[in-house]
Length: 348
Figure 1 (tube, rainbow, N blue to C red):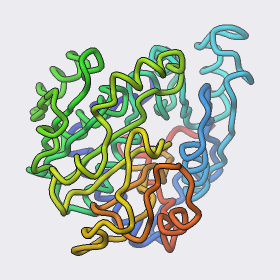
Figure 2 (figure 1 turned 30 degrees about the vertical axis):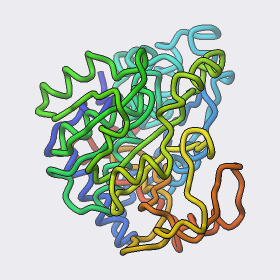
Figure 3 (figure 1 turned 180 degrees about the vertical axis):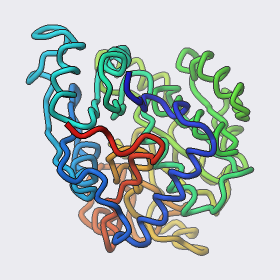
């Protein structure tokens, strides 16, 4: 069995810190990014649609000297056209790494058990580890050390929340999660995170969750594959929208994060351009979250120090000016993946 990175707790606290340190160094000095994938292929398989993850993964592989091989779910027919084991073995015969976004987390586990090359989770129904590592890097950039800081997650206790729980446990970040009844973070995830030393608190009231938080995080209410639940979820999550009232309870220095896609006016709402707090205080640069602390992805997620500045209310969901304001002066496309503990892979 090859090395796997299917959830954040596949690494320990020291390894996580090393990955984040390396990401920060490489972002500051891209010339230091090694050509670890020189002459090697990386299979990049997507059963689900992807924009940021696909682009950032492919560019990160290229920046490391490798060649990304993009595959759609219908190209391989996992479990239909061929067994998962046979697909994984075929890909491992040509590629040094398999990175996949899948519907069922069990598919990744089967792949990892079937091949001797690294298998990396680009998103599953249970976990989104690369997103969580990217968020940890962004919080480091905004807040400094994560030790003793507090992150409030408001919304569905989904795959993103699960991976954030493990990042928090391994980095010393305190995590409070507020979800409607029936949508809470899985008890097994909470227990595992606490067993790692994590301080995880579950509260029903989102205002209680964000009070005094250093950062507030939200995600979509309806993830891919849950479209039939959209109407019920919209009702259930109505009181868990991240808006100006909720963020005011967190305080003027709180940082706001959303892993995208953001449904403005539903899951979160910016204040109007006439808000007296607009642009107040010190404001670090706004940009796309550098994503790729342990895998070949580099940019995913919106970070906004609160209150945001220079933009009218975005509840309608479209704004040319907001796009230019969010874009960094230089794209962040540098991955600190793969960790040195299991790199380089065996050449074929």
